[in-house]
Length: 201
Image (cartoon, rainbow, N blue to C red; front, side, top):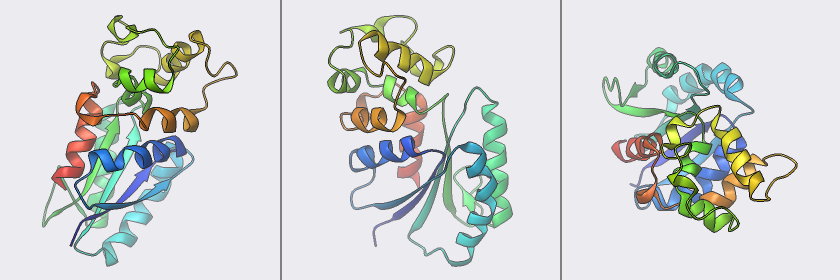
């Protein structure tokens, strides 16, 4: 039986992104369902109850993926918190499998927008007026190390090219860029870790 993934996401833009890239990054035949929240705090508040509920009935072929943004917080601290929630629910993770790894806790460094900046080709296909070599500048060379906020940096880049003058529409942007994402060329390390976690499960 093919694996099925229950994916917990902190915001609708991540849901839009996953919907577009799933078929290009997941194991063949794997199905999924997303659960998007209105921010990290809501996700973290509801997650312990959700995980305990899953632990009572989860079928053998089900896996759980939890994705949150780093948001300039302590990455290790966030991962530790997620791991504790899984442990308290009795679910093994890739980090601490116990009787079997059922959950992958993953962090977008520092935000989902880094995964879009990680594929400049996809960005230019979605927004053709972008400069042809913007990714060669120091500011964008490492998408996981963009200074001053990743979504703010992406917004500035797109606004300079004439897009989203009223402010970055995150869901619309995620959907447009993700439609052109090719996982193998993505420069974001945290994106690659996310994808590898799904395959390892």
